[in-house]
Each structure stands twice: as C-alpha cells, then as structure tokens.
Amino acid sequence: MLLVFGEIDARVHIYLQYKKNDGQISIAKIISSTVEKYGETIRKLKDDGFAVCVHGIPPAARTSFISNLPFLGTPEQRSEISREFNKQLGALCRESNVPYIDVQSISTDENGFMKKEYAADEVHLNGKAVIFARNRIVEAFKGSRNFS
Image 1 (spheres, rainbow, N blue to C red):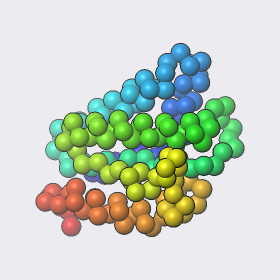
Image 2: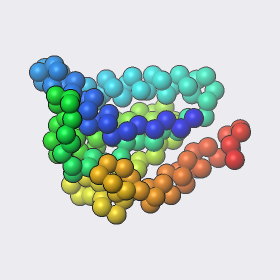
Image 3: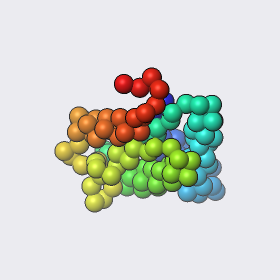
Image 4: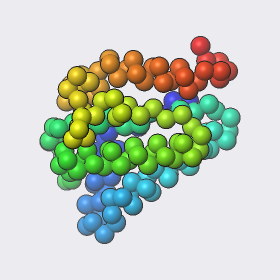
C-alpha cells in the first residue's frame, strides 16, 4: 500500500490549525501531532500485514494562493512547514521500518521551494519526479506478494 501525502497538509491544514488556535499551539507541535496520527495508521496497516510505503509531501511552491480559507501562510511559512513535516514523517517511517520516498531530496531548491525543472505547474511535480518515485516504489515493494 502506497500512502501519498500532499503539500496541502502544509499549505492549509497545519497553518490553519495554528492560526485557529491564535498561535497558542506551536506549528512544531501541530506537525508532530499530525505525523503521529498518520503514524498510527501506518503502523496499523503494517501490523495488519500490508506492505506499506510512504511518499512524503512535495516542496512548497513560491506561489501565494488565493482562497476562501482564512489562513494559508506565506510561501516561506509553507516551505518551512513542508520541510519539517517531511523530516518528522521520514523519521517516523525509519523508526517503523517503513520505506519512505523523500521527493523533496531531488525537487527542492536551496530556499526550500520546488525547483523549476521539477514543476509541472504552480503546485504539482512533473514527470522527472515520477521517474524518481517509481524507482523507489519498485524498491520498496520488491519481494512483496502480488507486486509486479
């Protein structure tokens, strides 16, 4: 089972929760709580016998989004949130012995944003990232039953 997490986790949900709580709960704590909840599901699937692999979130885009939501965070805030989210999610996967695909390792520039050569549009990664992810998926599930 391949679990894919999206940048919207950082772009909307984490920063939104931070602002809804008037900054009383730190972004770091919200990220930790979110990753731990994801970890519960990841470990349960693994304990239930599924071969599990996790695909981390792509880097943030430099774009400032227009939305009906009250809080989105600046591109810089989203970049930091996505970097920290991936760091914690990757650590959880390593501790749980679950393969983790760190797409940010190839597609993030020195400022934490999506590299132009990996951008399909303002938010999504292009085929270069697909090749990277596909190879990691094959590695992760090699030897699993019903995988070809």
